[in-house]
Length: 416
Image (cartoon, rainbow, N blue to C red; front, side):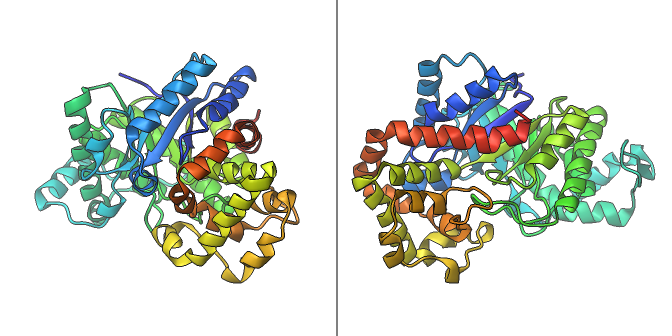
């Protein structure tokens, strides 16, 4: 069976021009003793907005690997796919994020609920997960509750998995089950029974992406109770270890953190826990590379700086439209957004420092950053004008992308 490496990092790239810059960051990590599998990820929504196809993501990844002579594993992720769009990705991808959040709280058949409950009978009245003080007391109400919330979602994951398997064959791709894009987090107890359902349905998941407590907004830091996150993350690690040993799931199953870019406050927490338990981790990022492209254009000055300002001006005018699809994962204080007139007077450094995520920097504005994060549709509409500029200034832009991934992300996550 194809197995994902212990550490992996999802590198989203809206316009498919930063493959080499992203991979240089991975090579730098490898040179410092940490092997990280790069996973190029791009969702169906992103493809639709920028009018690209999954084959382009594969082409970008293959070209970067060839250009830099990357000797390790690399993967291409069909990000947040479902039965309605999975066929679009099958030929180009070997990592599939099965997004079944929309099926949470949908009813499963009474027969399947009964079968699930019967499958839990051999565990008796409770399950003790090593490292977690309180045993999980198995009651009829508990099993009915987790089945009502999650069984239909896991069954949907099974349908998507079987569709992919029917084309690519068993063991020829990596499977992730994703339940993160929902309002309520899943508890470690929820995770225990979700993993039981996944195992019962024969889904060889190697990563699982739950919804954690707190806000995982796009491109900005974590907002929430860090201590509570740490408890959940650690207990999820322990639950996964138990599930691997007792449910027959792949031994390399690991947690996946979605919207993981720029969550600097919790990176040390995750780093400490995975090191303490010697466990793997997958962190998925997307728009942070697009933001570095805009920063690079600003730093290039001239026409490139004008274009960066135009992207913001047009995004500001279309704020409601652009924010709509991302409403659950952004928090923008409109009163703290600079006016188009103000931004028009900024120099390169002021624009870059306002957009670049350096916590504590006096110019950094997370509201400005989030609006540009969702404003990539504006750049897409510019077409060759935008992509021509990032090609023209590829050295400046690429340096920004590499520095961001390595210095602000990988170093914090993997103690480099």
